[in-house]
Image 1: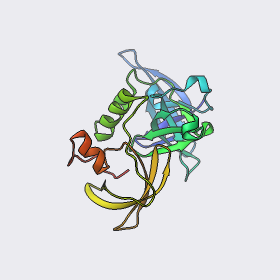
Image 2: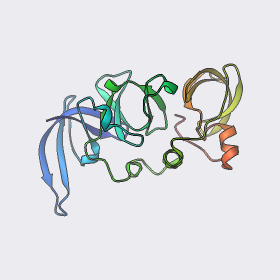
Image 3: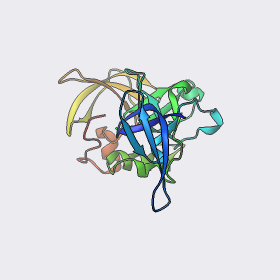
Length: 213
């Protein structure tokens, strides 16, 4: 059976289930041989189906993996955050476990085979997990800031506030250009990395994400 399986925390790859192992406590583990060499013994929540899901199988909060845009053989885990609608131009939005948000089409999504009862338990204890807990609680009306292209604001990057300018606003996301190093990235308009949002929530000074995504 061809599947996608976790090789590292932010790196899933295609492979085949070679064997099913039953542990002493009754839990099942899956021995996966990866196409790009290597083997791993993983749990059911670290295996995803190598098929395109049906629309009726998808919901906000679903555990998914997404095909990397720069490497078609690698995938990243995340949580489905928006379903297609006219407000987001009929796209799915996913928060990757590194806090990076992105809009994708249905062919880029793969459902995790046997997700945990609380999918957020599979995300390391971090500001991103706290953010996702609040996001899913607030859904379908998550908090969003409102900016326009050309506006300047302060955003956390690598643990420090930095000045940046809004380049593009795309539905729930906006692309920022950091003035110091000309770094560009997409960020969610409700991210706690935004100084305005951090102040609103009373958490100014708390780092949103150590790796800057």
